[in-house]
Image (cartoon, rainbow, N blue to C red; front, side):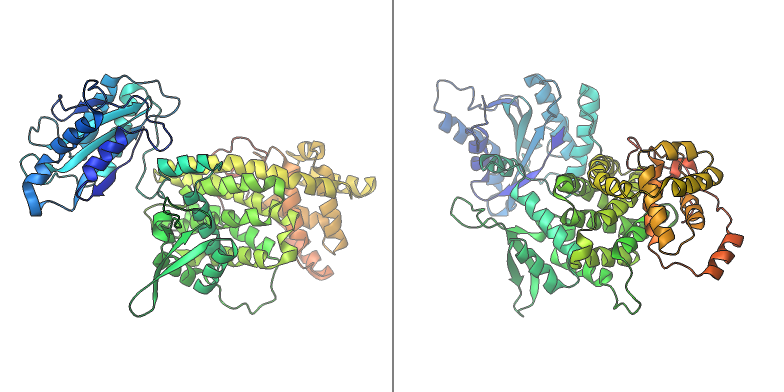
Length: 571
């Protein structure tokens, strides 16, 4: 059950709201509007006064609601209307008018609008014009002339909604913490539907702005990226000429007056205001690189692989910074993905966005490497189309999302935990779509039978518990290929395989050969050590203690990754 509070002001705010509630609606969706409850139990009902002009009854109802406000004259508050739609889930049973009336009384009591037994409370009505929801309309002056005490009414109403769900056996929603981005309004949904769009303008703009933030290194670049993606930007300047904020619109999205529909950054999401974006850019802009640049896919994968360690060992501020960086990475990955996987990656990014928000301040400095490497990928045309690099990074991102889900669970962030789980499903699908053709191409170059037998013998010695599964895995040929490529590049395949096996346990891997393929692929592209170094490594190689099985790399083929129960070792 979803309640939403909307405030109104102006001389005719109450009359406009009553007219809307008893009117046809934006898309003729208002069916049989009628009163189910009111402050006194006998307020006039425009929907049930069959022998009177409905408009006159609407005027009378609005006048009665406004009477305490009018009594104050010039001392009346600026904001006078409290409007709360309350909607049931699609799968919930159809409730009776009496049940909706009881829900309305509980909601206004929880909000401080009309506490139970308070005869001098605010005036309010509950109007039902569809099976699945009601609208509560109240005026914000009590009948004794005082203002209602409605501190934190949004949280109070949400808490009461969770209790109502339990009492009536309705779908149980996760409690929030007030950090979610603003949802599209019903009008925005109806408008998108009329225009044949699956997504509202607000959601489209939010996605494009988030991508621009993740991809930009400077404020100038941020605005340039918005312009390049077809977003119209209107800066807000102060008397000094400095830019204080911004609003965005989509070309062609117009209001009834033919003017663009503008959204400020802060109304798209709290972290998309210009001050917040400036803070993000200041703390994540990379320092000039002095060393020889490494493969950005490898850098991004290495940084993503460290996220589970931060989530289990670092401070909450660093952990939150890692989640924000992971969300930014997921925002940008659709731009590098083949068409078949793009929609799943976009859906995963949109869902995980909720998992990047909490009341914990993020330490963005800890995620500089991940930001820099993903930005480098976007700026390097050859890297952008590297499907093997994308598959490797997605493999690491899946593990990070599993740990993100567990981190939110331990912090009792129910909505964020659910968002991470939902994102994981789409990320797994995208991984399968990206990885399958890459593995098939590798398998076509598999080395000869004698070479594969040599690799198999060492595998049986190094990982006896997993060797049979790996050798029978469809990706075994691809694994043999990357081992062969690494050997050709000068690596000792035995040492390389030992290093890959020591990174993470394979106990929970549905496709262990795939997991090893990406590890070997990354290790094999590093600079190969000379003969003396290889000999020293061979003498000193000791298998590191492996991470407990339940903290394993939950390979993308694992359908239901289990949350970690212990803290993993840093790899």
